[in-house]
Image (cartoon, rainbow, N blue to C red; front, side, top):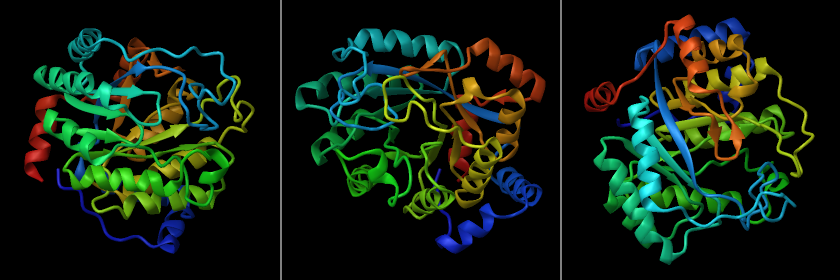
Length: 326
């Protein structure tokens, strides 16, 4: 799918966010229907392929070695185990398999295994996504040549607020990696986390940064912070649910052709809040009981909610047809 959107000024984005909620939702749902089937939701499965011991100090993350977390570090798991999990995800209806490793960047010794994972999942007919931290040019090329469809690299928040959350890398580091990935022809998956103590201006600025990428990310995960024990944000004040819905709606309007993923935090959301997010333009979720180290609704729970709302999971065939039409 060729993903194009107009250049957004900060004032224009703020004006959207400040609209009366009913007007904002109407605009978002209108844009959503112009670009997607409003009753179809893309489903992804996320697997942690290397857990804990990360050298970064992300204040929200239980996998950081700097946060005093009791989570023990693991080695990169075996390729065949990854492929077994991918097969289960495919058979369960997921169309994209996402693999996440807790490290600052992959080492060259890990690349052969990572390439084999991508190739194996692709052979199953699933889309592939990885989140591995920062990448150099050679690593990007190897992953592209293996057939990697998406690379996840969240910007987390605004450039202004970023140093309050992470000090071991810069906002510019994130942008540089995403530019490198896009230039190689890999689709970008990038979004942020809400409820980390940021202000409204930070949420708006985050969306402006994403929407003004060229092109905008094909996939935009919007996470609600799930405070993790032993992290600096363990006692963070939750974001107001209506404010969360506003961000989903503004993201849909500003990035009309992107998949907006209702990501971490769903296990703490009511059915009503999730329904509002889908109406606001969210059309992608993670399925399975865990997201790396955080809880996620069980698949039976999602099936019940989808039945109540009349939603259906998007199939890989439908996704291919949608891409071909763009």
